[in-house]
Length: 330
Length: 245
Image (cartoon, rainbow over all chains, first blue to last red; front, side, top):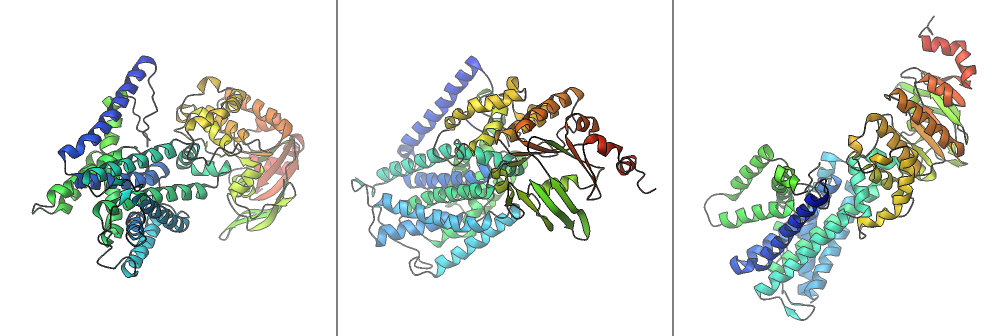
């Protein structure tokens, strides 16, 4: 597990390493702040939404060891809930997103309740099956408008004040949502609850013998992951101003696994880079004749064969990464 | 804690047959017997990691035969494992703190920082000192020697302040010095709680155990204090491997 706060070195060296890490953090924030000056804002917003989605997914696989194959249900489901709440109930964007988050959390509670009783491939299959049931529900339900999806979702005014219809405002709103989501994940992982999750992943039997009802802790992590995936999905619905079936398909569940693996499972920031890579490839290959899936497939194979820890995971495990005080342990 | 008519079958094979067992306060009770006698199975049954196919288990007047393992652990019936069970990538301190979190109501807060757990440090340090691991406080559990891992496991088990402590071969694979240390710790903790241990080292059993139950092929062969049991001809036969004669 990689953790930015864990240092092995002592004294001055770790102090230097820490200031370098803070430097990385500030540089990253600065880059995100000025990015819309150089890059197409909608592309950046898409990237941020998927990055948050991947981080939410990583919360489950990286920190509790559960591989969900149905996370699209929470992402796409929340997109529908938010779109419906904003368009039909005329809620403000922040309340609309809240509806999406709560809906996804509720969905997570139901799917998680059935899935956490099993482990490994069975867990993955149950989440897939339930997510497919939800896909069918979305296809048939009245409010999702079937194949058309919910179109023309207004972005509205944040807190009734800030007009989100301009790309710049919407970008900074999305960035704020992304950072809040990341902060929630960081706190969740580095909390007393996170400590118990870590111990369950380390040795589940021992955790049981210490009196922990591990199922409840796993369910808690599952619901939290679903809610954060919902935060990403709800925001995406506002960015693109529509919610469609694409976001609830099983391919979307697969894509988020790909992003997380590419970036580095169990590193807080890895999935951001994984999502960045996949979304960028999709964006720039969309206009070329070359099929995107072949490229992402090859990238994925290269990743599995050459750098199994993912981009960020490999960096943490490298000599430079270790000297900077990053630790990568699985 | 007492068990009556405890039985467990895996398919046609009955691993434990009709075992009666009473574990008393302030007493070290040993469960011994040749390999495959069903000692670990009895352990798993008592701590509910297995559900018995027959018989009842009561703990402080409550029937716990059908309760899940985490429930009985919360009631104060806490076990250790035959293969050392620590959280390898946590420090010694964190291993003990994880055990302390739940009884102190610090297990479910996902919004508080990790520093909230610092309030457990004093108790954790006392437990760590009690088993002689103070200087390894910040070491990763994975880096400890085998004997020290076992000792750490006892410390985490004690963190729950159990009423009954079940130790599955606590001395297995330990060097001579470590054995003496652990024997001392067990003697000490048994002053105000019950201890049931599976042990192969008969010298340890003779030294620290007040009561011995001998199992063979899933059944109780003999019971009593060490001297009585060790002089029992059936037990001698079982240990010499000549019971067929």
